[in-house]
Length: 357
Image (cartoon, rainbow, N blue to C red; front, side, top):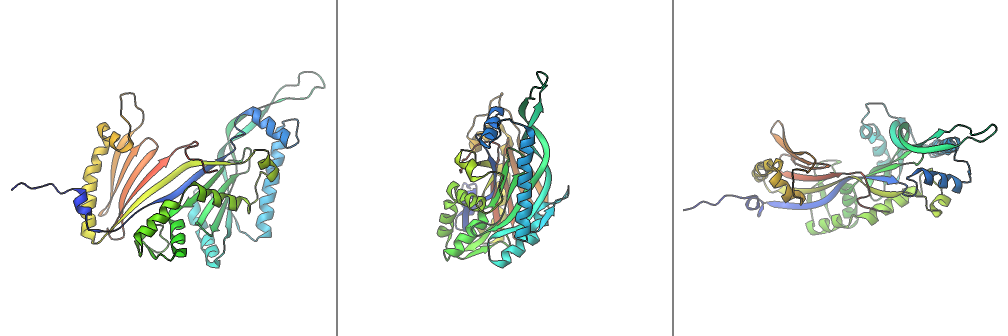
């Protein structure tokens, strides 16, 4: 009698108590689409009432923003933390976030200050054309080490997050959120019981309503993130003003790094182990070009650039599989006594991939 090969679907059938897909970490760029070339810098400064596009004017605007942050921290009694070179920022800020969460109110938990390289506009001074003539300036973008403010906050919808604002023109920003935290809070409001993997964990081990939980996950999108951004832009000190926004100078948001996770919770650890063993075997083929097309929907030609690689990492008896393709990574691993298998799909890409503004 012929024997049939056991497939991944056979292992999954009837042995998964929870299967949920959700946005996990969300890391966004904020940039000024109307200030991307030198001529637009001149136009912005003219809008601000400065006919001469002097770098001294830009420095004055940056000083005003730094003073506003200092006043905001003092008036609201917000701790200001200067990050060290090797500090893990979230670890430094976690006690402040915990303290803010314990109040039950949304607010800025602490402000982190760091010196970081950012892509900003810099000016070069040209020679005076004639005696008594005015100098002229040319603008261009360059990487410079400037001050960046990390506003670590506790939000009523998303829980912990931060907004980073560069203190130099054109004031690029970053926004970091967590989709699992948002989903947990929305589920609680809807009366859906959710069991996290562990205290403070950002993933799920169980729920009283799997379909309802997945429906909440599916609701998280650009409009929800836009509401978050607008809420905190109204509360934080900003280098741009309402008059700037009315004139068309405001931030658009785009993806920098977005993780999409799929969590499978098994009824028994042994079934989880069988599933993951089969998953490891299947994923070892990801390094072969003829298999890449099946995952990424793109033919691989001799001229195709990028790295095709699979890495299996073993820590004790735990196995993590990482598959890489250009700016993307698929990570698959176990949590919580091997009962939970999790897959994360991460896309790292600069540019306007998903506008949420």
